Image (cartoon, rainbow, N blue to C red; front, side, top):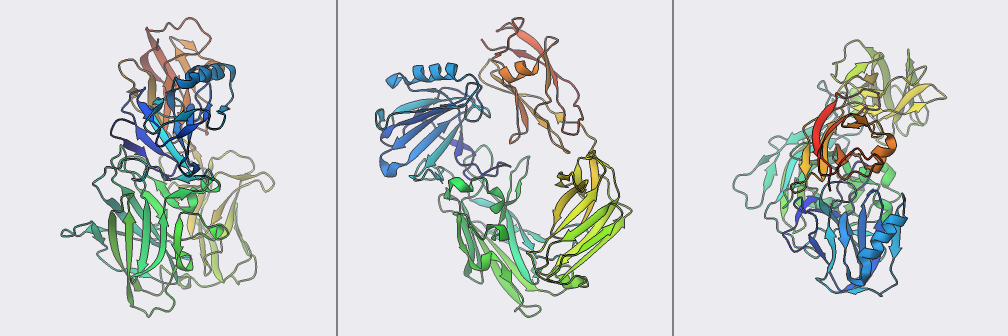
Length: 560
């Protein structure tokens, strides 16, 4: 783009269902910014959908350099050369309601570096922005937000929020915290940012590391970092660098992220700095070093012995922020399964049942503790209605690969799912054969069945587009079962839109941005809605539990 690019979403970010395989650049709420070819090459594919799903409209350009190609997504139009824009409009009319791809004859439509190939827009999911991807000769995704590919101007260093140490077989503390953590303090005299933990963290047995960090990039939002390296007493034991995502890896966000990102400002990303057991057969390409799978074994440490752990958090320009943590060997509660008496033998399956709750282990690889007791008092969560007894499940395996399955028996599917004492949903899966909700358990927790009792809520709309309202974006949130995107009931001037009208108007709920998108370019069948004039809009929406929001009302102007 012939403007200073500002990032709104980075490469490899957590998108709740997949990793973000490109970089989103802000286009300042303007359509029609020229987009330039990155290298000499030729036009490859035009991809689109007449109702603007997904990318809406995307152009693929193949480069002579290493046979790479780039993708320009959410664009408003393509270049007029080769009559390309006319061909696209024809395909868009003929596609009816399906995705389409126009494959160009190889090397038949050459472009030069710096030549305009498309124009930015707001088609597809989200407001005005450019989604830019770079793919290699195997069609795997490369990090496009890198000085090798786009100009990067960011004087800021990455930021480290906190460090979390997880010991398999841990026992839940009195406050319910599942792990030992440290809020870091910054050294005042350091040239590059250096953070310290003010006290040593006690550890025992196998220890895994997680970190909450982000990158203060030249961005609308703080974004995910480029890489993290972990050192124990100066020796590198784990490192990842988000330089590439294979086609088969874009759905493996849980191999990288732990807590996901927080919604609200600022954004922090929780990273797993170890290899999970289910990832050992196919280690993701972004993991560069993993000694002992990134797991610290402290069994040989003497009680009270201390070691230094260092984290180097890196951005795309190579700027590094450091964190230093002291680890201290401790034995017993709450970091070791020996804190609870072993009552389950290895090599067997075990079951514990009480009233309508049952916990079953697989064949244990190591000894464990398993017990089940009813809890009379559980702190209420305002958006949930408790519908069953609450149970404290004490599960402390000595082998971190062991886990258990909990079953909550219910005669029919009337609840939302299993929650813990902090209001976090454990599972919404229901086994019709056992007539029970079920979820996986890897440590001690309190479980109960609950129903969502709070309706969705929304805030004032944010209007995007110069002067005319091209897109009304209304943030809608739900703390319980989640927004049902097919439950929108919308009226214009008191006339209720049919579901086919809602579909034609392309009204949609965006899970990533937790917002309802209402385009004002109406494509419905009714002729009572006059373009260029103000109309009264109202709508309600439901969550999956059936709770209906209050009615939102506002004035919009249908686009000419």
